[in-house]
Amino acid sequence: MEFYDVIRERLSVRAYTDQAVPDATLARILEAARLAPSACNRQPWHLYVVRDEAVRQALFGPEKQDWAARAPLAIVACSRPADAWVRWADQKNHADIDLAILFEHIVLAATAEGLGTCWICAFDPKNVRAALRLPVELEPVAMTPLGYAAKPSQPNSRKPLDQIVTRL
Ligand SMILES: Cc1cc2nc3c(=O)[nH]c(=O)nc-3n(C[C@H](O)[C@H](O)[C@H](O)COP(=O)(O)O)c2cc1C
Image 1 (cartoon, rainbow, N blue to C red):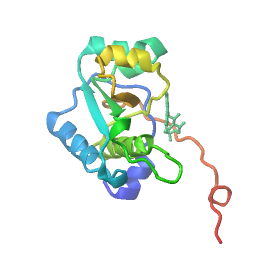
Image 2 (cartoon, rainbow, N blue to C red; image 1 turned 135 degrees about the horizontal axis):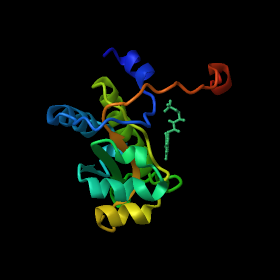
Image 3 (cartoon, protein in one colour; image 1 turned 180 degrees about the horizontal axis):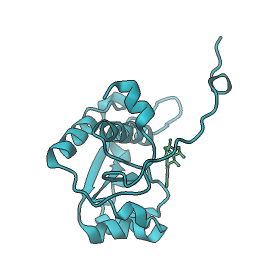
Image 4 (spheres, protein in one colour; image 1 turned 90 degrees about the vertical axis):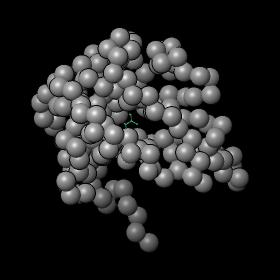
């Protein structure tokens, strides 16, 4: 798929079939994640690929996101803040920025593969930590179901460019 078509095609998918995701497709998506840039190339992240249905229910069920648990796969992106670059001027830790870039690589690669995703940050980190038995140094940042859309998503509106760009 052409790059700008991928950008236009990507929409949050909140209805999934149970059709399996081929291993080769998943491998390409994970490789796209691996190639993401990060501040000072610290790569302060770790991904969990979850096929286990009980674990997927434990991730999405508590937030009533059962639609997400229906997809055959979930990906949870965790940061390792202690590994992230910290800006000297104000001590800003860049782990969340790095994670967002990694995650959007996953989302766009999945779109190019004809798969649906949906950023999910509305979760209680305590539940996600327990479901994945996360080591203390990892922080769950975002997760997505990964699978085939059961129905087309409708595009949401965006602010016009003149409201979000200042040209000097
Ligand atoms: C950081 C972030 C967190 C989000 N968290 C959730 C979420 O917890 N649940 C959900 O259904 N959608 C979530 N979304 C999806 C947004 O609602 C969605 O991207 C936005 O409404 C624009 O719609 P679109 O993705 O279809 O273009 C999140 C998106 C982002 C970028």
